[in-house]
Image 1 (cartoon, helix red, strand yellow):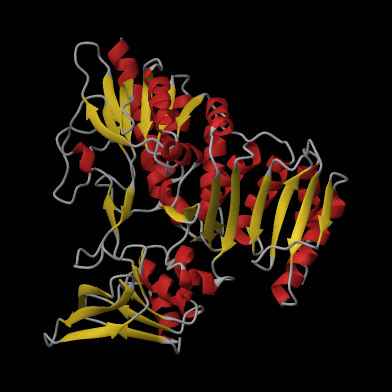
Image 2: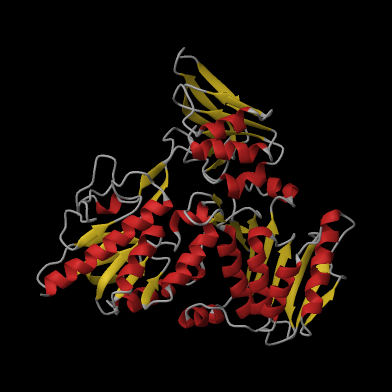
Length: 520
């Protein structure tokens, strides 16, 4: 089977028409099958543009790998492995950006990247099934394309497992700078630049604070927030979205098969389509910004939203759609070994545990789906469920029980994550029927026990339930006039994409209705 199919090749050829200068693809190969695949990939790409040449005499230590080099030698990006799967978009963008096509990022931010002084060699370990990895890879590739002082190597951890073991990498994306740990987890360009240049955050805060008040300010860029923004923007009122990451939980969701009218899609793809839809309207999207407090409107009629970087945004109405995050077990060792054997995204980190023993905690749909996926990669999966029965759909339970390398333990209360100081070596659980304690030797633990709403920052501002959910009425209204809420952070039952979109649309319409009644 060809590395790229004909439709993909045709699309890539169209993209390469945007190259502004010649580029060279310099491959370092060995005699292995992955090197053969990489050669085939580069031999497919090179003929698609007269501005692309491929060479196979590279001297890099990691093989297979290849470097994309600009004709002036001042811009280069390296991939160790094959950037396909979720990373294929990273390859396309790297070709374009090293080839002189400008990234679609804030112009001031790009100027800051160009002005960074020093010697920066970044290395990012990724997996081809990781939805968050492309954000980091693409951001660092942009930096390497713009600034000759910056180099970036993106490394497929599954392909270079000896190095993963040696450098004690147990989660992706993991980034090193000049050989030292720099960051773990999703980061975008603005966050990386801020870590390198503290003044960048101050400039961003000043720019945000200078914005005129919004009619509607949506907090959160997931399905609920996107729907709310579309509905209010269509009414012709000034709308903004502020979010930590546009797409929210969608970015951590691999397969989606219950989004009505779409038989199957993937979370990152749907998130990108949501953002594209929102951008068709005059919506001010302020991504990678974390809200930390909300002050209710006083005499001026404007609510004040305070961000982590010190910025203050003002709005006549607010729609809170901050979503939820993975719930933690809350036992000794969990936080200590987070990203060192304790993981929450099986799609992202699963490939790092190939041939090893892992546990999945949680017997709902997400836990059982994780165990099924991991069983195809790892040596042995132990699934632990607190209740006496699994709660997943019957079809998933049947599939799970058919797998020979899965052990199901019910009535199991996890009590401790065990480690050796560097990484996870096992877990301890109590049999809730007998009271006996058991230790299981493991290399990794995947926690899948549900969600907790992102609402702690609102504790002293509006009414929350004992579970931390935002209390809303039938119109999405909260206990604060002019403040609405929607999606997984609220009391709305059934935390589903299609439900969140409906609740977001309702909150948007309610905010508009509030505005016209308040102005009359």
